[in-house]
Length: 349
Image (cartoon, rainbow, N blue to C red; front, side):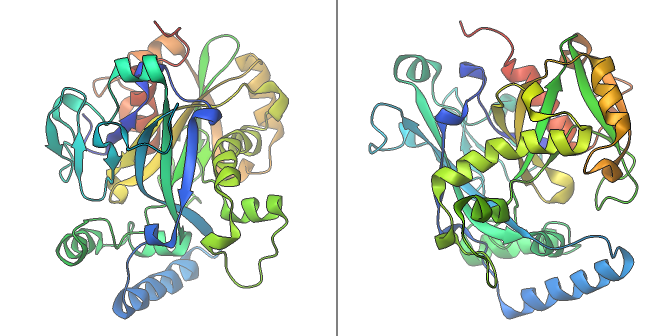
């Protein structure tokens, strides 16, 4: 597997998860650990960054701490087969029963990811529970994106037993967007964005705690805290945000987009294993129609410079030997690997 990316979990055996199959557990326990020296380091890096790039701004983000699989018929029962998966402690049970260390970039034995047995899913159904805290974009740049990220992982393991306990680990979202004429949408990232400037990407961004507060009618006086949020509203925002990113980046109205299907979660190792939930979404417009809307410019048109379409069958065969692969940013690579594994547009056997 490409060393820039690995898969934390996939939803291949059920061809992806709909919103009704994903729940959220919120707690301050799932926030990152910290100390005064680290906070000073984060503040220093932030000051330097905004001096160079004054257009970037801070904001609250959701922090992925861990996840669990539950039996749908009895959500109060114990997690299936012990699938309480804190990716921070770097022990992920593969579907063949082996345990493999995910501390290295090789991640999982035989490239398998955490998932309950197929028979369990088909007979009883599963609910994915994401255990989330809060973090911020500033904290992300000062931890995951810091030159000290590797040292922070060592400290996290020694001091807290979890390598990424000191890292921000904001949960991103991305979309493999398929048009009516079976083309997958890519965009060329602008050189003004904070990461991966000039590379090919898929539409994506982050679910926003601020939007959850606005939808709940909660007034934000100082900063957002976990007790201001609703787990149901956060789960809704996770799915809504990926469609909103398509609307804002590609300029496609929401009524032309199908229901988002969660394919899994990928880790970006160029930013210390930052997680991203990757979705599959169908669009009822053709690639020509999508291009026409893109060229008119959306709310976030400044984040990309061009749009590109690749046939679905070609995307299903992309690998490190493909000429297109080196042009892809890590988040796009993770989404493509999940798309190839999950195949959400095929019928469940």
